[in-house]
Image (cartoon, rainbow over all chains, first blue to last red; front, side, top):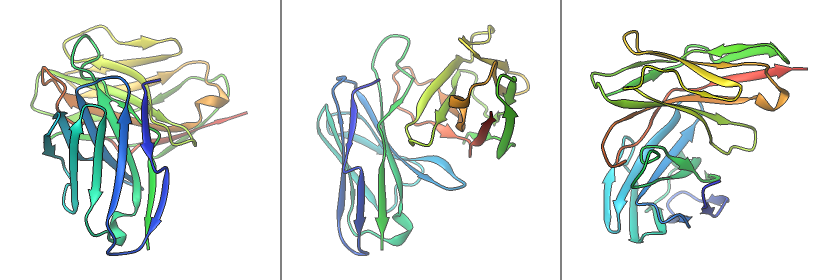
Length: 115
Length: 117
């Protein structure tokens, strides 16, 4: 299994509060991604990073920001959480060389509930 | 934009049977990758198999194989000798070839596969 951890694994918060989710990898992979999973939607890309301090928006980026100050950590921040952001959040990584460059490996997920 | 469609929300088969999950996709790209991921009740997303669009040979991984029909934009997953541990959500996913990996996956909505004892 790829060395990917996510923290926290579960979180309950209230509407309007800021929330930060952390993804940590030990694989030294260049690319990192944040997805959300909702019933009936599969997984959808929120943001991704192609290097330290290099990030870009995905399909459902509104209400989210990200930061990557070092290779191993990719943070997802909800500046002011809303109930529509209740979801399961997955981090993924992919390498920068070889045949598996375009293959993404996923972390265990974080279940976030916004009340 | 790419779309991925999984037309079977749920399937149920007996243990040891063979089952095929369907996936179709829409793209104007010529170079891309297709994947099947498995998500058991533990919620972990597990890569099952991968196919490069430029390869005509269908990918296989032990009991898992695909039928890749590029012209028809079809990418089905066949599971042979199904086992109870195969019970899971299965997601089909598409990724453009980017030369460096910096593109997200586009997922279908999933097929819930139940293996009955």
